[in-house]
Image (tube, one colour):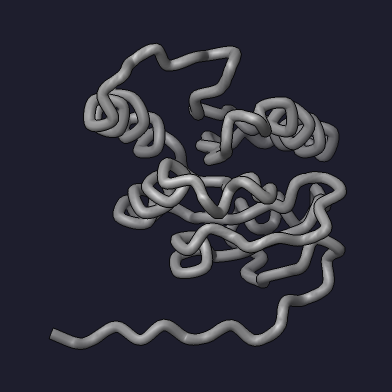
Length: 158
């Protein structure tokens, strides 16, 4: 099996730190080494200024990654940090994919993911890898079935 390495930033809420290791192991077992630059309990951020955290800690890590993975759990939708990270990745023209946490029953996704995401997939290594590589651009429910129609966002010309 050929080993593929990808630089990713996994946007998540800190209560989901344990799930990041599961996600990286899922990908590793299928031949993808996901080098994650996100902040987690293993690499804590002790800064207190939100602007400093965004500009000096998070932005360079997002910019370094080729892909943003958004780890979706019930708390993810309400995280201002996750939405900011997604918007930053969008401004940098990164591939942005959502991955439902293992065993998820569904919940709302962050607004920025709904607007800028390229894919949303269940706990399936092959589909996640295809989405990371830009070969899969579907929005799925946690069980892998397709989501219903999504509204098309209209942006004014100007």
